[in-house]
Image (cartoon, rainbow, N blue to C red; front, side, top):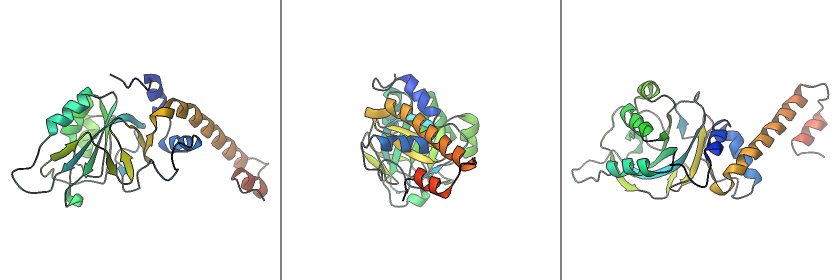
Length: 231
């Protein structure tokens, strides 16, 4: 099942555009403040050579570091949500415990299972592990996380289907997320198809800019004009 608002052709087209260009294209529509809608540099792309990740968010919160026997475990709820959600899916998980630097959300087994259910990636402020195994057993699956943590601890999902925040990026269930080596940005659903066309215009402007820098027509005055600083 795909999201009825966004065509499969649009999703495929977005996969062919880098996330920085998508972010530039979104600014053109002035649908949000340009300082919002993207995650900070704390969120690390673990497979930067992969093609851009594009998918609809399934959200949850998790605590993997708190001890005790009466911790909730809503893993099956999360799997059910991924299976039922519009495809492709990006699982977005925010940490809620007290020791985030030792948290660990995913490894190769979990990522492989998500991929079988239509998942294309994870976005989380938790750590993860088995990066080599993920690349081997779930090729093409993308992972954005804080870094590597060797043990999974105890993965207690504390909430599902709620609005979360990951390194400054607010994510609601169903949000369209785009990520690559540059980071992760959310694409407002209302302009997703228009973003594809605007991104092509952004790329054309950039090509013209670099052609100018390499040409005999280059001048400092011309450079300032192209950068919006004509005097």
